Each structure stands twice: as C-alpha cells, then as structure tokens.
Image 1: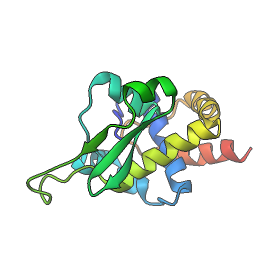
Image 2: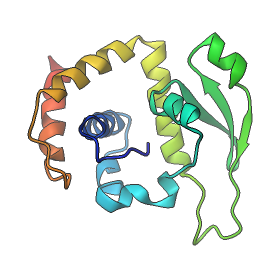
Image 3: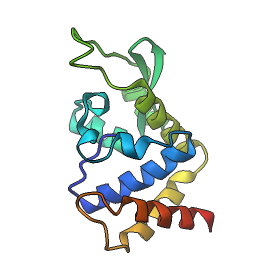
Image 4: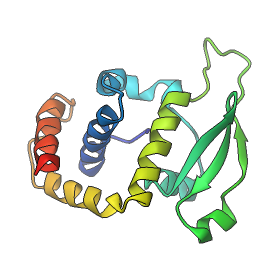
Length: 158
C-alpha cells in the first residue's frame, strides 16, 4: 500500500485505506506505516507506471502461493488475459538489511481489492473519497490522520 502522500488525494486514500485495514484486523497499520515508516522496504515495490496504476487502483493484486512467491490476479477478464496468472518471486541476498515486501501488506492489499470488486464496494469507496475531499484540514505531517479516520468511520456508519 505504498502511496505518495504529497498529493492531497493520496492522503485521503491512505486514511481510507487505514480505516479499511483496521476493519480487516490490522489495528496498528497506521502506526506501522506513519510518516517516514511508509518508506520501509517491506512496503516498497518497483513497478512500471501502468502496473502501478492497476495495483494502486485495486485492479491488480498478488496472492501468496509459496514463500515470497505470488500469483498475479486481476479484477477483469481483459486484465487477466494480459497480466493474470503470472508468478512473481521476491528475492534478496540480505533479508535483514534488504527485506522483501511484507506478506501481510500484500495480503491486506489483495483482500481490499477482492472486497472492492466482488461486492461492488468500489463505488462506495469512491463516495467516501469524494466526501473526504471536502475536508480541507489535512496536515502535511499526517497529524490530522486521527480526525480523518473518525470522520470516515462516521460516513461508513451512516
């Protein structure tokens, strides 16, 4: 769930993602990835721009099939023909200093993508993001994250 938090929309996306992650049983995700921690190697992957766009948009995700090995899954038949079914294996010569992406973060991303596409939740998430754009109080340092989390929970409850 690597996001560039310089962009206001990305900050809103991240806050929404944190709220969803908490509901999936990751209560410390915001603290784990707050501020500079978001750039930890466990949360970083290099992708081509088109693949990054699909991954960021929950159109493409990785499902673990072995140790550090993942199968690419997609949200549509068309994408599956071009990208689905491939295997990706992350390797490192020094796991302590240069860890591979976190299986937990990849599993959480996959769960969010599946829920968004299997339940029709994608449109609902767009509604939340539109509502959140009306809140002009996000601090660049992330200190308003708790406020946004509270507001998002309120929107979800109603």
